[in-house]
Amino acid sequence: MTIRTRLGLAALLAVWPLYADELTGADAILCSAVEATLCGADGECSSGPPWSWQIPQFLEIDLKKKVIRTTQASGEDRSTPIKNTERLDGKIFLQGVEQGRAFSFVISEETGMASAAIAADGITVTVFAACTTLTHR
Amino acid sequence: MNRVMVAFAFLGAFPVGMLMAQQTAPPPPAQKSLSATLGVSVFPAAGQAADQQSKDEAECYQWAVQNTGVDPFAAQKQAEAAQQQAAQQQQQVQQATQGAGAKGAVKGAAAGALIGEVANNDAGQGAAYGAAAGAVVARRGAKKAQAQTQQQGQQQVQQAQAATKEQTAAFNKGFSACLEGKKYIAKY
Image (tube, rainbow over all chains, first blue to last red; front, side):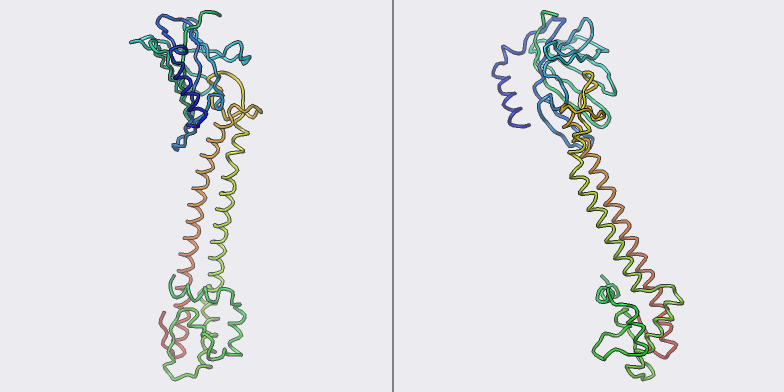
């Protein structure tokens, strides 16, 4: 983990109550990716900011429409369909497949913290994010 | 390294032509004999003089080359060349490995769908997004290639060394048989 990402994580934790949120019952969620780590099959890993791995800084998760997309402000206009969604024991579980990549999200409704894993052939990416409810769009 | 190999190393660049010339111009007494160079101990059982022994050894060298098809000095040179080639291959792969991260980073740049483009290293567009992912994948591939090349190089060297040893044994057998025919006792 680089100094930059540590500082980012520390800053996020410092403003934790303002940033992550209670998500119970929310149908639209906004997540901010904090840290990403990419690992190869030989165990070689590299950590860095999300954009290092082409992960958008902000993600909108629409649980009703079952889609994850970039924010309008980002200008990227990228989206991915969610194949499975499930709410269980205070957690939101999301799963999907796109372009040879399988992804799983686990989001805590209580804390708003999210963990995501993306698996491709010979490579995995793990992402940690903080989420809050999204009221518009 | 066995005695024969040490002897070969000692005369690695020794022209075979000079060995042949020993037939007409025997080496001075202080010079290492042909048999000693080949790692063969020769005793003149019939009391032959040193210059006669040198002539006989040179004749037997030629005879053994013709009859076994092995020239130990040439075989040694081939083994050295194989070793050198393996070392060069390893060096080339190491250099390629060092550059692989940067090349992979360029290849890894891409843009596109959301999850499908995360850590994408397949496309070739200029964005910096997937660069680091491409670098990790490229380094991994290069490391694998380097390990394979090193293994192949080691195998080639081992095979060359084994072949040289076998050829040297065959030659020494012929060389000794020839000398025994000339009333010497030869051991290798």
